Length: 111
Length: 261
Image (tube, rainbow over all chains, first blue to last red; front, side):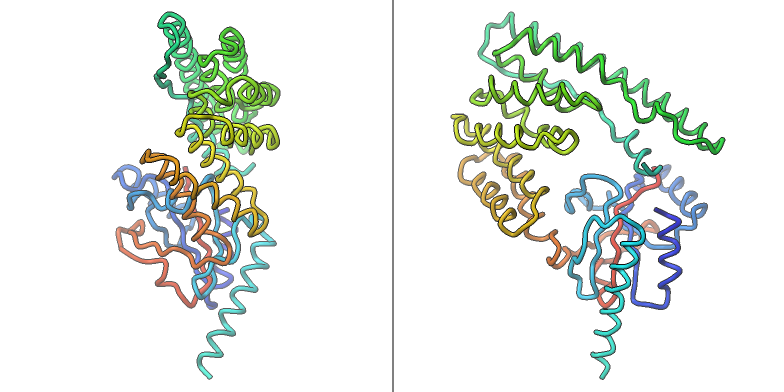
């Protein structure tokens, strides 16, 4: 949830990690966008989100999202490594492992 | 249950939409069943709208007061409509007209587990070879996921695939079975069985809608599983700036489908 996500973004700000949202708050309408931006400010959402409805079919339709929130864990090579991990401690564990691998890969490439 | 999920539930709960149905049954029976269905669906839609308004109001008040989510939010008024649908299904027992009422139950039940289980059983025993069974099949997923009716649902689908003579029904059954096999898949073998179902759809129907459903489900199997390269996304962010998911190659990405609602 948002406070947890905010803490992840903060915790890993100097490591190869990005939280990317696909937001479904109807930001295609002027009113929806205004409300969204207010909430975003209020809730301290600093990370970037695609607008779900800016594509046709919508991104969530293409990705076959059945319920919200849905999470995909994508590694540094763009490969899906986990789905549906929801427990906060478990999320941090798998992400930390993935980030460590990304750092090792980056080091290897520099050598 | 967390707040965003709950809020989404309130918003996404959409009552059954009435749909016309064709049948070769005598016009009087058909019209009676049709108008009974319309009345049921309309009453239900109204009750859900009223409930949603009231539930949203109470949830907001509770949140403002720092109170827990009130019980109303989890209790849409489905009970009386499910009972009514059961009565109507019994009235048209054995006839195609019963299918729409059984579908209504699978589609709209909230806590009425027994009603769903009986509806699935009746669909299996009375209607598996009917030309009108197709409309019911997409809603079996809910029966299976929410009410744990896996075995009866799968056996109904097997029955339709093997014994129904109407190609659209068989295609729909293959799509539903393939999708269900996919969501329950734990091995490559399970996924292969799902793939086989979905591929078969292309061999037996030319219906564009059914073909598109099969294609979307195949996309999920081929591109959205753990181990697949994530499909790229190129779209606008909430500031109106275009960007791509692949811009973040080299970083670990947590892709989160979310909303405040």
